[in-house]
Length: 146
Image (cartoon, rainbow, N blue to C red; front, side, top):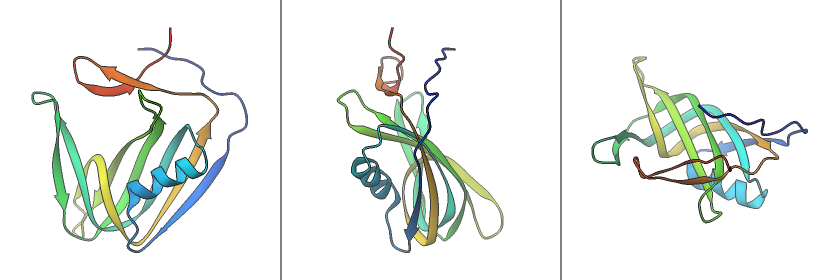
């Protein structure tokens, strides 16, 4: 385990309210670019008309997509935005979804269409948090300098 105090200053906090038909990942990344957010925590609740989640397969080193072709409630959308190896914004988000019968699905968030709304809080940190490619998993993981 590694740790580092990443922020002690005041934080900028935004509320993003998505409307029916909005695409989530595109919206979050567009917001981060427009607001010049480098590193932040993302959390949200709402509902989707459809979604794609994924499970990372350790053997193939790839994501297995799981299409969700039905109305679902978003019980928890949690993750972060950091900077990638080339300075690009990277979203790492997981989601827990509830079906009509109360059963749940969860996994790595790929994208979704909002219906009727999605409410997302974004809490920025003043720290610069970067990702670099980790050789064993081939995933861009958070990299502490030094």
